[in-house]
Image (cartoon, helix red, strand yellow):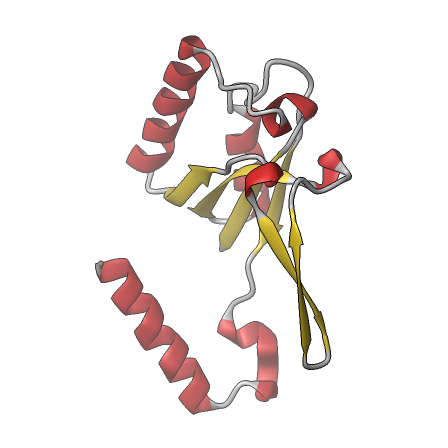
Length: 140
């Protein structure tokens, strides 16, 4: 099962306050545990929304919205991509994570869609294309 693990933003992360040396070391050690266990497939920290943009879609119209974005609690400051047996294993790994923020914080775990989730809406050719692309990405 593939999951995306989302580190939720806080007022501090949105202000661009960088983590301490101790937290960087703790997170580095945690990432090595994930990597050595074959769980971590990718992950990065994300800069504050003040450095980002959104593109709003309405039919054929596109509107670019400059950050910062409101509702800090709905923003993300980092992510991992994991391969786990099930959601319980993902939860156990998250519970082992150092607190990613200097104060209270949250980490959200969401399963990724897999080709079979789309049922008959995805043709065999589309499934094959998706598999080829994923294999090529993993080989890079």
